[in-house]
Image (cartoon, rainbow, N blue to C red):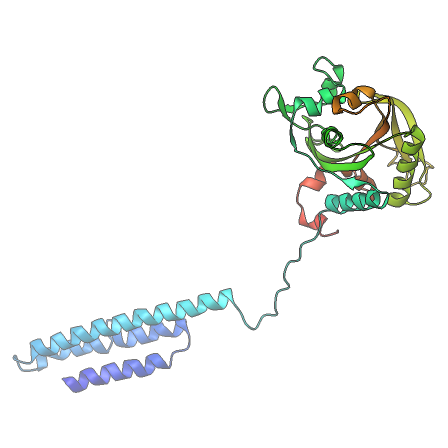
Length: 335
């Protein structure tokens, strides 16, 4: 009796140790644990034994069956774990190159703009994106009844708290804490209640510039805008100013750059005008100086703005602002 049990156990272990793949386990089960396997035929031989030995042999066979079934299930788990590990890590495959990120095109352009103005002697200033009504409007000569507020499409948090519609509030904050001379730019994110389309977004980026000192003139403003245009787009770019209106500057103007794609001859990008509209500028309004605590009789200054998104669209010949915010890796990898 013991000889039969030991023979079945040792034969099972020998064949189990020789198995190399999960699919080879099924023949092992059939041979030892199947309906016509070695254990089943051994149970059939119980009747051949003397009556006093039958219970002992039956008990030993049941214990052996339970033992082999447990070992068989453990073998299944081991081989499945190995196959799962192979699927996760195949050492024969070539190594995967790690994904290396890069700067977003808007960040690239913003850094380039900051570098240009730093080289021209400007400091970089920052301010809160959640502003109060005074800094965003009233200190900039835009009282509550002023029609220019309708141009801003403001996103209000409360009656007096809002998401800033431009980075101009930073200019007021700087003028309040620093005496002239002041020469700064304020790049940052701004928000307006715009419906997204190819040229509008409720979230975009601006750069505001401010220079305040004694004897500052409109000629100084023109010179700094010309210097920026040449360094950003090349020495052959021309600048023109057109009369305009902004409540925080007087006189006010809008400025354009000659088209960098057709060199001013006229093309699809510039709508055959030869010029690309950039933004607005002008001499700081005396009321703005008064709100910031600066004497308009002693100091003059100029302010200008530009859209980082607009500059990036021109620089990379992109005709839809929404592509900057879609996070399409195929687009971003080009930069």
